[in-house]
Image (cartoon, rainbow, N blue to C red):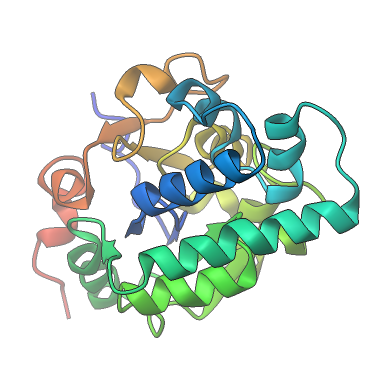
Length: 232
């Protein structure tokens, strides 16, 4: 039986990079340039399993292999994220089915939020690039909470701002670390295999409830009920 057979969310929470936005290739290019400039090893997919979804302040010590001062972390973040914004300008698209899903949720009056580890400038840039800047009143960032993903804090913060019990929320994520965070928050969780293949989610402490290639695939599967006529 589908894990969603008896579940209808009261709110839906989305990760941003790689989930709402099809933009991870631009982040990869920015990281590649950053690693080259600083003489660091390549950022492989194996390494990305460990870092994708984390805050930059937690990513840079992994990349450099030693502790980083707050000042250096801010400098590195500015360097890498400025490169991402410059590289991605005009090239980011919403993930397939994202707009369609948001329209279905709006038709049912279900509130939505973003829960992201992206810094504030990136959030505005990316949502504007994909044409969804006006679709989210609630945006929860991990720099607003005590602990970043895989801790549940940013998802709990989003649910609190929506005034919805986390257990009544459905979360969408594309990274194992993000899935771990959403599941730790007590949310039903769908993993999009837009960034990582399905095997990346096998060893997550609490695996996702379902996996789909994109939002169109979700709407054709466990989310098909959202396509039913809305009762008035």
